[in-house]
Image 1: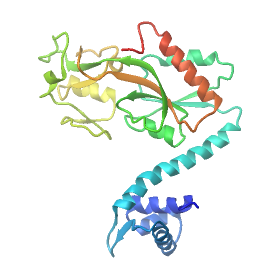
Image 2: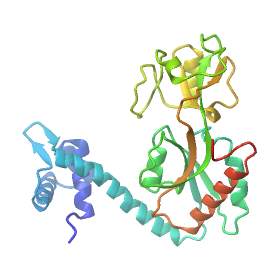
Image 3: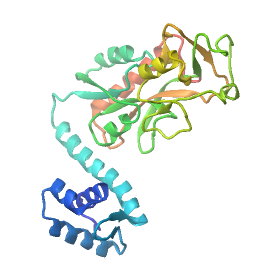
Image 4: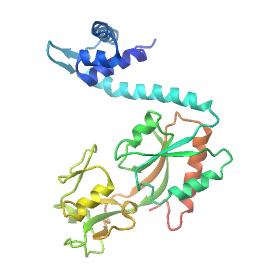
Length: 287
């Protein structure tokens, strides 16, 4: 027996996100009494209290917080399944690739060239995502494949293949006290101001940034330094210097996709991407 119907899960997620029954009811286009009754029915069926209610306040219990976290993923999976089912029957459907601007380690043109030679190749629509939302594109079905950076991106639940492994460099203003060094260690950067990437938990104390171009401006202005994969700052912008950080964990560029998306065009694209990664001059998968 299924404990929750999709509609009931949608109702709960709306209330949990709004923390207000009136706003959630308006968002769902249903009457508030009906929504309240539905949530009570869910709580009774699960045998746990999901929400703490008062006349002025709604909050999540630990059980409610857990259901919100897993419920979002479940709804995304249902939506992705529906999209993939519709698209599987469309012989003219495009393949959708999501990347971060400049986040292809200069492999994209080679990947597209290889894929174009596949007998079942389709048109590739390239979507540009931000620092943290490309994984969401895969999980909710907006994209079929993505170029992601490990360990920065969360690959849990995704299928993936490594295309390229590279070290990291410190990006410094040309006049920085460490800019003349041939190599650095993380300890050398311990007291430097590091940026805070929007939406990414971390220990940076510097300005909040959303993308690499914004980071470059902040470094050039002397507001911060950064440690990034070398390919993200290739070529090196004027006024900046890149110094290898020898003990920083290596970075992997991966091609990732949902294991639920088993269409042949995804398999063909992944095969082309892996072949392009292996063929790129001066690049390897062993760092």
